[in-house]
Image 1 (cartoon, helix red, strand yellow):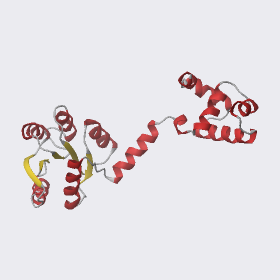
Image 2: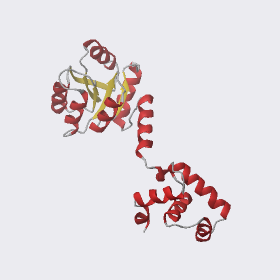
Image 3: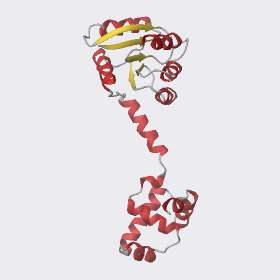
Image 4: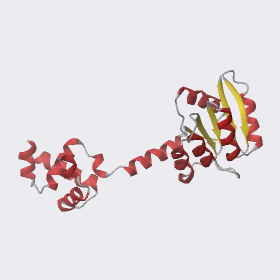
Length: 210
């Protein structure tokens, strides 16, 4: 049996979710709470396998409760909320939430998410997954998007080489060099080779390669 605690300050939602989950043979609801502080204490006492956690509650938010729980417990926390703005999503995941679902999910989807969490498979609402990928791309520096060859060309630019010198150094044709240089400038969003060279030194890329 998968032992579950449900934490939500909306009684109708909490009772409704529990009523459905109680029909699932694999699930056992071992406790419920209407606020974050009580929920965190309950989880520490009962040590369930999975916790369904609301985010916005008056007495202790879901983020605060998640953070407190994850300091000592190993259960999987599924955020179940109506919100998916950046101010809620990323702090919840950083606090240790395992999955993130919206309350528009069906009862079947919630039950399946609990089973998946127990198996170590997380479920991320598509809208939230999109935000995560966007943030991941934003966190990456432009040179990390370069191909291996483009990176080699960039380092050559950083060392002040001309196109012909790059061609000789990398054993590639001059036209190929020009193509790579053009791609590098575009991906780095710089205007010319001088700015590309400045980028190399500003980010310490030559030191990293040595």
